[in-house]
Image 1 (cartoon, helix red, strand yellow):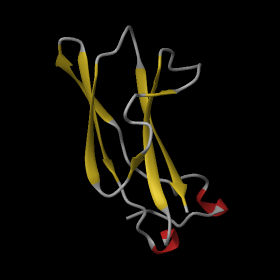
Image 2 (image 1 turned 120 degrees about the horizontal axis):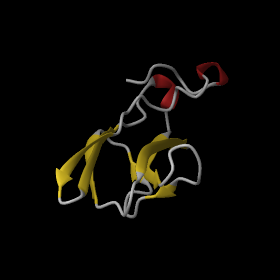
Image 3 (image 1 turned 90 degrees about the vertical axis):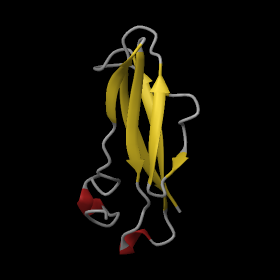
Image 4 (image 1 turned 135 degrees about the vertical axis):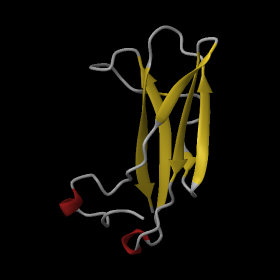
Length: 100
């Protein structure tokens, strides 16, 4: 369950506490995994949580680019597994947002 309802007092933490976990699986493939949580607390009535897996070459700067096929995942409590073969060094993160 979410830690607080969406409001200015939550300072952005209202989105989700979901963590993107990754590991190398051999042959230069990386597997990323997370649980796409549903927006389910009382303050989320009528809201839908979405996720996008994004990457970039430099951790400190540059634009985060969506990973193909993982740009808009609707959260419903499912485990999402992403297998990628990075070209060069890549950093990954998880973006989450709510829609009415």
